[in-house]
Amino acid sequence: MINNRTVPLNINNFKLCLPYLIIILFSITFFVYGPLLRKHYALDTYVAEAYGNQANQQIELGRFFSGTILKVFTALGVNTAAHQSYFTFPSLCLLALSIYLLVRLFFGLREEWDIKSFVLLCLSCVVSLCNVFMLHWFLFPEVVIFMMTGLILSILALFLLRDSGALRWILCYVLLLAAVSFYQAVGAFFVTFGMLYIAMRRARQSPASVLRGFIAVFIVYGLAGITNVLLMTWHGRTTDRTSFQHTNPLKNIYGIIGSLQEKLQSTNLGAAPIYAFISLIFFLLVCGSLLLWKSADKKGLFQILFVLVALTIGSFAATMAPHLLTSTVDMSPRSIVALMSLPGVISLFMLSQPGPFNNKPLFSHLLLGFLLVFLFVNTYIIYSVEVSRFATNRLDKEIARMVYQEILQYEKETGNTVRRIAFRHDEEPTLCYPGLICYGNFRAMGRDWTIVPLISLVSGRSFIEASMPDSVYDIFFKGKNWNLYSKEQIMLQGDTLNLMLY
Picture 1: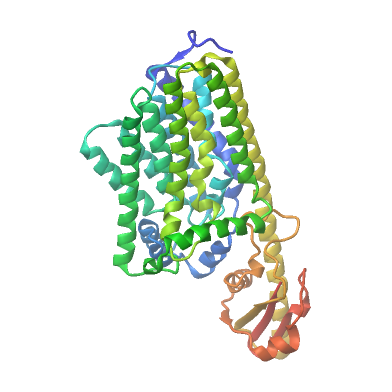
Picture 2: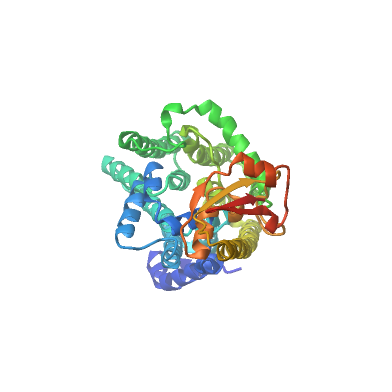
């Protein structure tokens, strides 16, 4: 272990190592998410490529900047799904830059850092933004650039917390409003890292001072969120999720619990975040035990415990707040991604404590081991999901092509031209392909809103969605169930393909 006194890092020599730090952060980001530079599809991606940029949908969800920019792209003839690599690459760059900005923000809280603490600082920031929940953003390549733009704006808003005066809060509000107008989930990052910054900066002040800072952060977040809701209401174009006159926050609490249970049961990766939080709790228990054993400053210990609890509760509250306001609850990893930053956030806070931890190699080794394990496990899962994503896309397209071959054969034999596709589900629909990770990799050939776009894409033709008559269903398909694609799922009649989804 390098001695703290022999290798100090201050703002001057930090600038000297800046190019190396940026190269390392970019390398890590591209290593973790780089495979997704290859073309791939979420369910929504098929719709966007087949029917064009979904700008109006983004506007209806309150993502006004995202929708407006998509309208500009549409006018320029640019489809973000079809040209996704051109948007995934800058998204990776924005993520790496976001990590660097976090390192820079928290680095400024000390006059000098030793090498081991600086490495832990960087690693904590990396695991805060490189994890399996953040992966969910990249699984939607047609909009990931807007999510990342919102993220970096929310982090830039954090830098205003370094200043004093009322103007900083006004500017902070403006930046955060712009951020949530790209993607609302980024607001929870502002709260989580903002509370952490206040706690670390005011570490030597009273708990009341820290609490006032926390409240100020929440007020800015609340005002930005309320303004976004008011703009949606004023705009008058809403979806079932943003029809706020039907909102029932108490009912939504049960909806959130039910949605989480559904996600855990429907994906074979659902338990991974639970394991992450269990490991975090175990790590905190070990650190807390050591602190209790070594600390004689009970008042300081109380403040540390207060901040840890407040950070956790505050992050959960900020993450769940948007879901309490929607008419229907749809929880997904991409909307609660800030929660997965907690392991890195808690590690950063523990790293900042001047107590016995920073004087004992045990703490440094324990923290380093925890962060490395967390990063490597997340990276392994991310790679597994990426492999399953490409396999799922390949199988979907293969089945769609086989269906289209049946259409061509029918048209050749009958002279009819198929223009419509009608479909229903069999008795037990399959969400994902067996043996593949189901995390965001749902079967496009088994979902209502992606069948027609997918077949249109692989065929190069445009089909119209239609309803399957009861007579056709009762005669040919009723009571049947399939686990694999079969020609028995197809019945061609006139200008219509009747298809059973399994």
